[in-house]
Image (cartoon, rainbow over all chains, first blue to last red):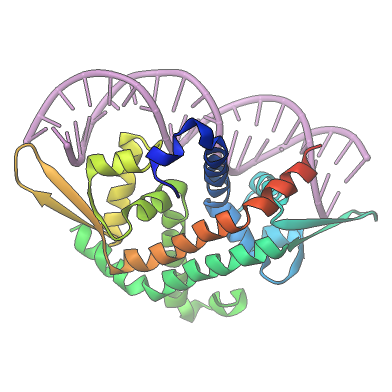
Length: 126
Length: 126
DNA sequence: CTGAATCCGCGGGGATACTG
DNA sequence: CAGTATCCCCGCGGATTCAG
């Protein structure tokens, strides 16, 4: 990011646009369900119903909603097979896979520090 | 994570506990404000009011709420100076700094793929 | 200055039903 | 099976106030 003073100059409208776009994307992506969906997809190609089974606790609505959002941002590819019954498959795009790497890092972090965190909680609430 | 079949065996209650704890931590951490706060802190030590200025758009309530949560999980250290007026400083702990590395990765990802994403959006909504 | 508590509106998100 | 639409309620989160 760039310092406020520089960014706020009127001639740098493009920088501000990029910043606000980055913030928007960050807000889209930094939410539980989106990250869990990305993690669930991994390198695989999954159908809608498979994803719903895979991402534990996600509702029909949240799944479609987040999939649309991810598709809109070009993180997942949506392939519709014009059969009956319909069959729709989702796959991570290259940007999506790149993001997944960071989600993996978070998951790794979570497991690595499980002990620390459990201990901290014990210390916190006596 | 471990496959459902194995995990659901009754004798593996401890594995399930670890999994559910991991999920809980993930849910705590995978939210916009928590990540923005962690990113804002970085290597610095900041006061409450400084954090509120730094994390753009965060409300008083959300800031305290997330700081409590982060403190409870041992990601931030809260140092109270018994002065008047009071002065409270927040710093990332070692686990917190480790997580920040992954948040940095997300931020890097965001900027790296800004173009891709903007293009994808243009393609999506005609 | 920090933080807890209270009030309250709005929207997230679940359940359900209906279309293709 | 996948997706959209509708209803509806609970709780997130903002604004404000009071305390230390």
